[in-house]
Image (cartoon, rainbow, N blue to C red; front, side, top):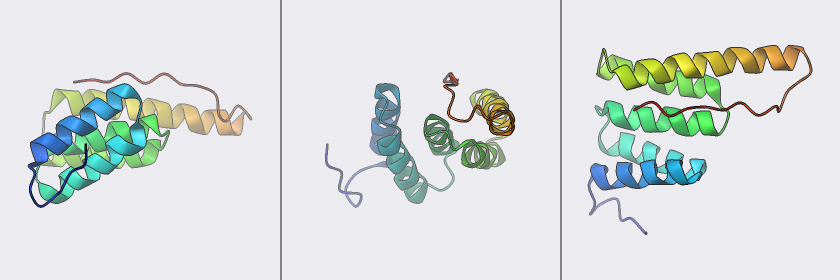
Length: 113
């Protein structure tokens, strides 16, 4: 689906990003999340999508930043709170793995809605 950002709503872009995330296209999902955040900077759901895209790309620090942005926009958003905890856990494990020479090991991440 080709999207003309001038003639489409952020909901459509966000939904496409969510589908891409579930299909394993994290880079596409991240592009949609960034576009969605540009279109609606006050939307916590686009922060969630951006954060999980970063988790799938194993960029845990950026994921934490995106989830924190979402919590600033919508305090008490349970899905983002759980996602932030997961991203922090993965960030901690990735630092531990680097110290122990296990960098690159697969870590499963779960989507929290």
